[in-house]
Length: 356
Image 1 (tube, rainbow, N blue to C red):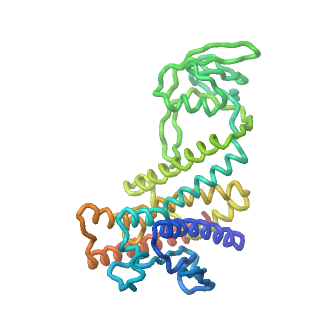
Image 2: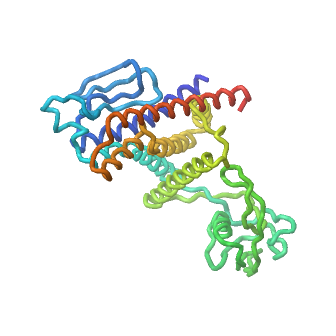
Image 3: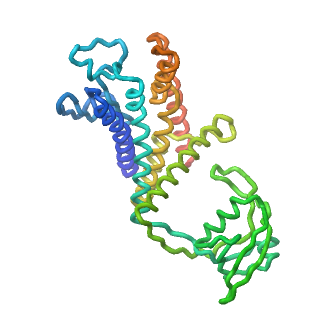
């Protein structure tokens, strides 16, 4: 448990610091003063003043905050602080400052993925057939274990992943495949068939397949900086789409909300990933960072997305949301977040007692 707690503190510390640093650096670059930069909430354990800003480490490590000059509309300000006031900046500047937190979380994921790809490269499966499924299109076409797949529909094949991608992206059309068997080239044609499978959410689906499994061999491919960045961007975008799809499925009811986890589950998973190695731990942080970025962009008052929603309304109507309405919406948003926190804590406790 101690190992998991340390890993949890490291994970949350990195995610919160990056998120709040996004707000902080955007505020300073756009001419807004910052009074407090805090990691954590509640009583301040450590604090140090540098210039105008007080940098703090607070007792409750489940978040953080940046307190900007003139952040609250209607607050009294010293006339000399007006040029540094958040409220007195343009809608564009305020929106950029608010959006910087979530976008720094996306940048963190891209950075971690880039480092992993730059130093580890890719491990790909060799395009050698290891097993043929019974009564499959591959068996009927005469494909045999040990065959090396060279081309599919005249596309050069470098890995088994290439084969899977071409078949998966098709709609069941006929495939022309070039094989190498014992030094000889063979050309065959076959038509994929629908086969039962599972998607990323564990749901039963049907997908086109030809009924082959690779032989388990892999090889390493080094990546140059441009290739590493391409893969990092692709992986981050893939996580964004997967997270959004998960939310849609939970709202529609096709994915159980019991899958949601809170601090206890994060701590357990952080400990497991830390034990598995630095690469797994970095990937886990990147995954959580993307999730945090997306959640903060939800149009719920209290979250960054809620503030962006207020700015959007102001941009359309030409006047800010009234203070009373704003206050009620923020209270509603806070109630929603508290209810969600209670729910995920409940899920965590049930999962613990069920041994999950």
